[in-house]
Every structure is written in structure tokens, then in C-alpha cells.
Figure: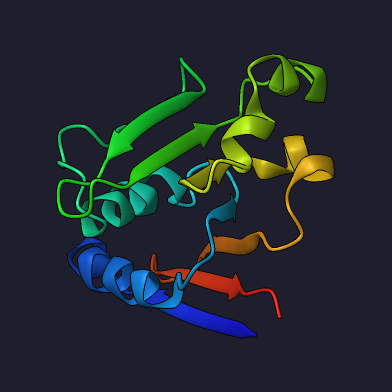
Length: 144
């Protein structure tokens, strides 16, 4: 099933994140694709907040590759991956990415193409793109 969410501006981020939460169902792995600067990190920060993570904690894990958050409302674990600096699939395997993906915790992955070969079949694929007017489109492909 496909779904599209339009984010007109930063003021609309929270509502978009809450709409996204409504689509998450029992899925746990979310692959966020998009060009540099498309808004992947910004949206994941808003999504994490909508899931109950303290806004000060939800930052990009660019230097550590993985940040771990815990929802203050559900106590659920959330892993945020930024794989931009990942050198190889072997490096991802060395940090134990498969354990994270199989953990049942929510996994929000930026630059997922670097580990595409090991993503679960039920991964929700999200493409974030910037429109000419500066708005963002989230094209969400939910597995059937």
C-alpha cells in the first residue's frame, strides 16, 4: 500500500509525524531515502518526538552511526541509524546491525541503500523529496 504525506513547512512537521505514527502499525524497520538536505534527519527527529522521545535527545547519529532513544510514553526502544559514513556492508555487520533490525525495536534508517541486501522483507520504505516550493513529500510504501 502506498501513502503520501505532504509537509508544507516546518510548522507542519509535528502533524505529519503524528500522521506517520498512525501508519506505523506493527512495522519496526523504516528505511528513509532521499537526497542530502531533503529532510530525513529533520523528519526523523519530529517522528521520534511524536513517539515520545525528548526533543533534546533526538539528534542525528552522524558520528556514531546509531543513536538509541527511549519513548517516555511507552518505554519503547527506538534506534536511529545514519549510515551515510558507512564504508561497507561488512562494517554494518560488524556493528551488529542485524541484531538491531531483528530486535523488535523501532529502527529508523537514513541512507538505507548501504544495507539494502540485509533489510527485512517487511521494511517500510519512505522516500523524502523536496518540491519546487520548498515543501516535502513523503512517499511511503507499506509492505503488503
